[in-house]
Length: 265
Image 1 (tube, rainbow, N blue to C red):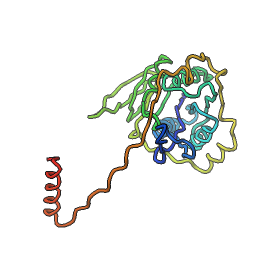
Image 2: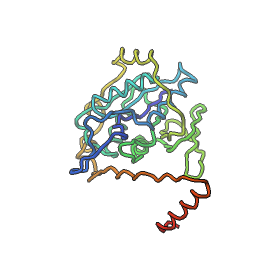
Image 3: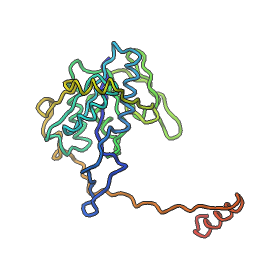
Image 4: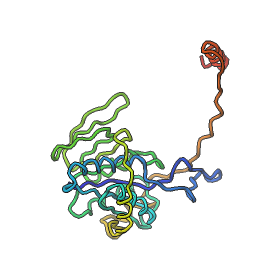
């Protein structure tokens, strides 16, 4: 079985600030990390591989600058067999539509094809949850989003799809695309042996440029992106909370009085 895992290197949003004049995110000096939901997707693929290590191959695929190789090395240190990086100036500035075009073209270029694609629900720097479904549409394969449980039986995949008030169970045939929520699993840590092996074998990361995949210039990059972000901003910090003291009855009385005074109740 050939599993492709979508992964993205993103800025650590815990440390992100915005330029007050332009409203744009300040990326300089901000730590880059593996997108958290994509770590759950990789763990899902690795758990499948754990059950049949001789017959399951996990490849991580990403689009980004050359520095994204650090994130791909981390993925291999977690257990992925190899990785593909789509990196070219012509991919720069892509929105979700243009990004999915490039990644779908890269996946279509994978030698031997694929059986299953797993990705995170969304990236923390965009929060759109659009790229995974768009990739599936462009590859013409079925998709299931918000997976909180995945079971595989032969060529059939049964997914519990998370809903606001429960879940629905969906069965699809491979090849298919699945996007995961964090409740699916807990990503494993890297270990020393795999870290050493990943750094010792950089050839396990294949870099493809624009010319290596079948895609037109009007399908990717900034000029091919119909979406424009006009501004972004960080929410104002919340004020300090109020600590109540006294007995349970006294604190309840004080709280109720305060809520009434502010016309909340």
